[in-house]
Image (tube, rainbow, N blue to C red; front, side, top):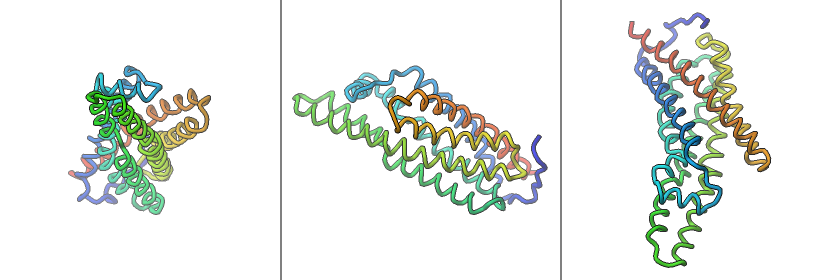
Length: 241
């Protein structure tokens, strides 16, 4: 059961934001399911030339493999996170503020270092190149883009965003708005995401463990987003009354 909610503590001027956050949560959940499907169906190349061929044979598959769905998800997380920040005011405000800033830093890192479309462009140039020298040049540039994506756009941004979710989960745990289960889902989402990155980048022998934590993070995030989004939409609807 949810704890008693005193709606007079929420500003009615933000009701639209809370409703948008609730709707955004549903779309985010659908995109998460899409990401699971993508990584289950699309083969994961083990070499640079394999990634290049993936983009050449099916550009959409290449974009999907390099997290174009995540790009849309992060945009939708903006109203979701801002809404959470507003309803959690008064509960460890310094932690909430730091977590919110961390989230925006994380997505800024993701978008500023995301090389997906650069890879798409290089694959087209590689496909139309006429000499071995040109192909070698485009392949080397492509390898750089892949490395930048994996190290900065994905690893660094994902750790920062996961830390943000972990902190927000702890604040939610102290709020009368969210029940314990929902709060713990937020904590587990952040924790699993951080552990997944640490295991993947510690040793290749731990890749299987990392994949397990990645999958767990997606499951926890799916549940957390749905439950939190439902509550945020409920608050927005109640403020209309």
